[in-house]
Image (cartoon, rainbow, N blue to C red; front, side, top):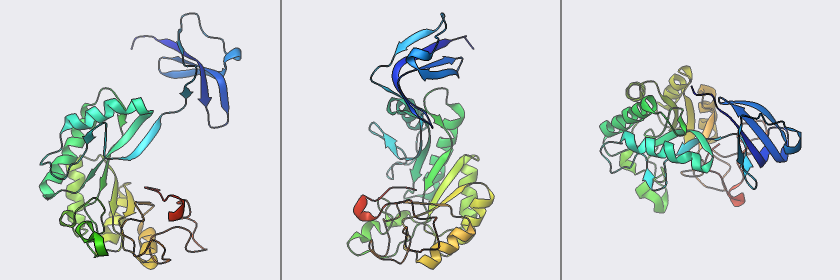
Length: 276
């Protein structure tokens, strides 16, 4: 690797402990040598100085849930096969937004075989990537979602942007096929925890170190806590598919005084949230 030393000079530096403004960061061969107030940092003579006045300097963002960027949609339901180039184009563009690593997120499709092709494409992109935001693995939103009726949203009930016909019953065999297609790159999977077979899928995900996330769910409180006991550790789009946005039954935060695990998401009136 070619030796390189550079200094980011004059920016507002965000650290875990303080904000330094104006500050300087000195980097040598990809390693940070010094961080501090601009007046206190000695910049090596050979360093390239980059003026970043008026800009933020902070650790790169990690995006865990992203379906596309700059007009590129990953995992389009109408697409027969997700392309490697789409994933790589997103990866190359994300640093513009301060994102340095991410999980490309796919959704269900009208044909199960197409979903497996998407996962294989994600794996290939991860294996062949040479630049851009680092692909950390694949996030799969579905296909193990409930198809319970939700009033006016029956067409997409309760999976939000995912059509009912994309849903599949939770199955360890399907999960194994999904993981095999991903080549071991699956990092997170969203499912409705109340479905028959979901708890076993969650247990297998947990045993493999893959994050199980409750999502688009019609689950009761009891069903939700059974999923937590099985290994579900987070939730996604928790208010999309619930029994009632204002109800105390089901997947929502702050509804049980003895359980702090679901308290991080604001009340719907506070703007809600996409993921925890």
